[in-house]
Image (tube, rainbow, N blue to C red; front, side, top):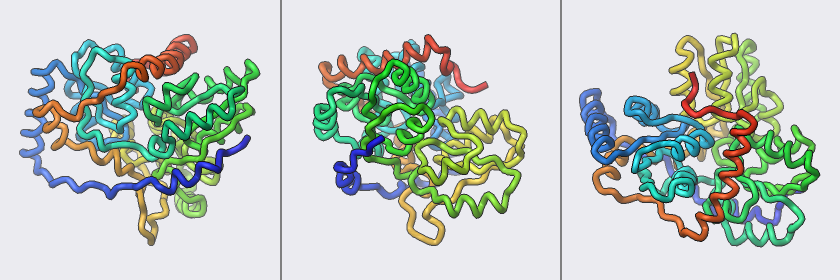
Length: 356
């Protein structure tokens, strides 16, 4: 396994935004705002698709209006199956792009197109294409957290819930793999499968904040708690985990495991669905570098935090913030995404209507 350390300066140039501050709404104002959004969704034959990491009010609204709350694999699948003319994606930009790639005939809106992703920004298409050109004997596997242009350069697109079986499949066929962009997820997949992998050097600003020594201290305070870790986390976090998995897999663990306490090392937005499914369980946020220091993420993605009820209503009123993708790029990018979805169907991976 080799990491493409020559690209590290790209990561250094990523500008992590401050967390946005949204005006507080009392119960009456929030209800009125949600009612206006519901009316706009109905009038525009629009459906709301929300990721587990966005604000709980948006997740709740999606479920109340016949939309969907899911991880990125199931968001992509739901969008492709929905009969709505407009998809409103609450998440980060690559999720909206994936929806448009799969649904070119539909209008795809987001509360803001400024909601990007450190992994996406850390893997610019031109530099990545050159990296691929330098290793033509490798199958190119990219994480969903990438731009349409990067996906168009790939052979396979994966999410965290399907990365292991796909890479295992390629490894069994004797293929060498060029992986991008998350080096921690790539390293975890390599360790689990034994595949020969060349890793792009990038990381999620949220998951990279978790620190092993701090997690160990919290674990000693809660010895009966199960530790749930997303594989985008560093090795020192993954090595302490009771469960390593995608957002959906971690949510299911809270519901299904007998433990009463859980230490959760992923974005705190996931707590809304965890509390919904297991209200009697205690959730403890894994500590980040924010303890006694300035924290870039504090276990919540600043780009995910750009989604709110207020700008959701605005985009439905104005019709701006629409995802547009060059058709030639879309036609290339759809191939590896559909390859992933077909593999998932063949292997019976995932589901189409949320966690029950």
